[in-house]
Amino acid sequence: MPKILVIEDEAAIRRVLVKILSEENDTYQVSEAEDGLVGMEMVKKEDYDLVLCDIKMPKMDGVEVLEASKKIKPETPFVMISGHGDLDTAVNTMRLGAFDYISKPPDLNRLLNTVRNALDKKELVVENKRLKKKVSKNYEMIGDSDAIHQIKDIIEKVAPTDARVLITGPNGTGKELVSHWLHQKSDRHKGPMIEVNCAAIPSELIESELFGHVKGAFTSANKDRAGKFEAANGGTIFLDEIGDMSLSAQAKVLRALQESKVQRVGSDKDIKVNVRVVAATNKNLQKEIAEGRFREDLYHRLAVILIKVPALNDRRDDIPLLIKYFAGKISKSQGTAEKKFSDKAVKLLQEYDWTGNIRELRNIIERLIILGGQEVTVEDVKLFASK
Image (cartoon, rainbow, N blue to C red; front, side, top):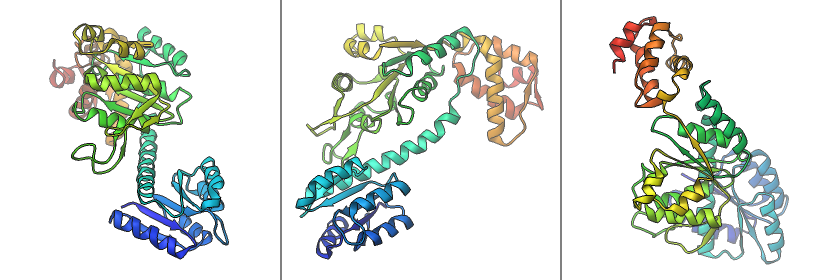
């Protein structure tokens, strides 16, 4: 349930704002403060999803409340309430971190749209922070083969730029991992890293997922919603399995790349975005272009830099390192001592035909750790990992 705080010294306006918000959405939990000092104390004690704050107030004005709040609760969005003579100050508060401002007397539609957009932004910021905490621990590039060294060298050169990258390779080879390395080593690493699996989203929903939608755009669109491109603003968007994207969505992605603008489904309003695009596919896009399933102009926009991730069968020298890495990680997650693999067991695993690539290898290692002996032997491999 979103928590909203209204800080306003004029009782009549405060009551109107609380009434409008409470009647618009009965899931909003609305609190009120009669001046800036009281409001500041409430901000310290409670985590609000949004604060509506008047600018001119006794004891502590709105600018002071905003500046003090941003030091202790930087994620909390502020919408400033400005009188007719406060517009210049209201604009300046946006430089201090305010999400937006509304004028007195408040226009109903403007107020409600601003509130919904601010709450959407807060939700995205929180989700992005949650995901970023996982990233650095979960993505490591393991290997000492020439192919892996070559990929790492390319990443070192390309990551600091904003060049678009197309990552190709079979399923399970680690294309997603490469995208995260590109982001983490870029100047955008403090911004969001948003992933979209184009193959997992129905074609009729992909445009809404990427670009967002406005309320009423389609049957289930019961509120305005920001898309992944907006969520990735200032950071990187990773379009996985882009070869499965519909042609209509491809056209909109092309426009977003050309103009750095998107439009939510059901709206004709342009939204500026500053996003680096990294894409990946397991398909032969040249063949898809020839057969009319992929736009050639989009391919050339995406493939400024090409990174080909090799199949595991083409980097067998890395298998011992990968076995050790996965054995340690899996054992730790299960709270058990790390199991060793005999040299013969490792050698046999190197000889297997890894059609499922690294993903398949990881699953086999987990199976052997669970079912094998204190040391995983060649007999364990033959018994539990037979191909």
